[in-house]
Image (cartoon, rainbow over all chains, first blue to last red):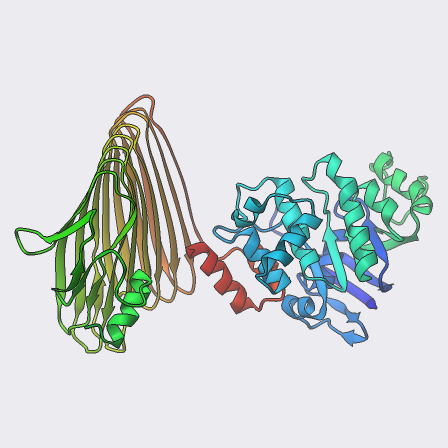
Length: 253
Length: 306
């Protein structure tokens, strides 16, 4: 239902001496996400996970390649057009606004000011207090609170594809499991194709399919068990000094 | 009698659909149009004949007084001196504001000089809106002054806004806070075209344990200019905070200077100031909810000035 075809994203890189060069962040990625499945995208820092997610949402513009959603080419679509087509994106570091309240954001997402609908959404993400609705989404909200609001706005859109970029950032340990359950429930109840960018094992375990990204390429697709040797390698790599990318440095790759 | 333009202006500046309930004083083109007093709120013309004295009896609770001004006469610059005496232990809302309708090429303006004495333990909310409408090319100016004196444990909340159409505004807010008193000033100004708005604020924290919080929100569109100056002068053990944010759109220009003066070793004063365009992450968030770029800008500005 969501197909990436030879998707590439390059960015201008300027070094300390002011010399600029092109750096490929996403390198010719092709993949098809199936309807209603739960995907986890993981990989080392700087591997291109978030960039890939942003390319799907149109936050970053692809240098080449295409994105096809439900049979329609949407590569040229703006963020707005993609949102209206049914793709939602939950930001890793949600924007903070002066004056705009949680209620305002949720009403925009749910396309209604009906308090019953809004209360139902915040209850689903584990916010019980009604007072919370009229708080501005500004610097006074804690990291965990703002992430819950971010999640709530994504859920309120009732999307066909929901992308969550590191949803557990700033969330306390006790909330992660309920959050995984919530995303699974949304996936199940609404047949939402769910894509979670995360390092957290709880999300990787919950996924139907795990995509492992390194150097802008998908190097593994499958279940968590199969990915474990590679993941362990990422976290414990002792070959960084001799590693030359594709060239075998006697590591497990 | 109120005509259609008067009604529109009253609605914009005082959210009134017609003649208000309770005490009110409507001034039109420099003259009294209508006045009503209540059992607890008296309004009388001052001895100089250039303004009104509003006296709120001690202990008056949950009452309001409306004192809107309408300027629709070409070439008129209306100057008015109003005094408010808010009695001890009272809790009242004062709704002021000025609406200019300009239909010609002549200048029109209003200068309201408002002085408040808020008695011991009294609570006052003051709401002031300024707007100018009409198709005339005449310059519309609004130069308000507020001077507030808070007695012991008094509380004042001031909501000051300029919502559009005013070519030139020079605002001066002065306040003197007594012991245990507190004050919250929120100023919201939007300018466009070649408009200029300047706000000067001088808050003197005189009594022990008094508190002042000044919030300014500016939206500067077109080629307009806004300047904001605020000084907290602490002369006692007190707390003061200034928060001033400006969003610049198009070619707007802004100068923001918050100043803190601690004349007492136990004064706690802070400020935060920012000037900039609408943050990209805010726009992207709202666009990801399905809003267009322009809709997202409008919603962010609306929230910011709310």
